[in-house]
Length: 137
Image 1 (cartoon, rainbow, N blue to C red):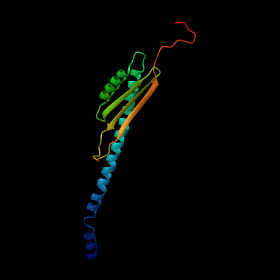
Image 2 (cartoon, rainbow, N blue to C red):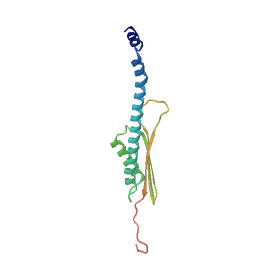
Image 3 (spheres, helix red, strand yellow):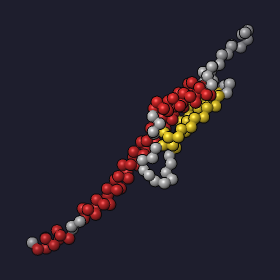
Image 4 (tube, rainbow, N blue to C red):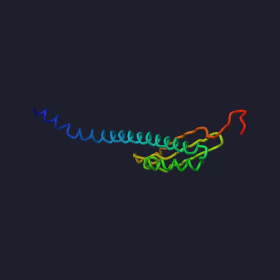
């Protein structure tokens, strides 16, 4: 019985040591999962804002300013806490319209130098009225 008591007392504190080593690792893994989910969500927000901006900028009477304004309204409506410091670039020509929305993803893990950027791009033909070949105006 005396050896049993000595063996039992020899393992005192083993659980505390294991918790000190394992819990921070588990918390880091959980925070990395949350950071990845925020990056994924911010990418979808940027893509949706780019698509909405494209729809506004490519219409016949639309302009690049209309696309930028629509992207801004979409980003404000979806919440600007996930995609911070967004920038919207709209290029509109007579035949093609392209929109790009970029931004920084909110950080969950305060690691210096860890800056994730999310972006979304949408492109399509600019709408214009055309006449069939050989038709008179």
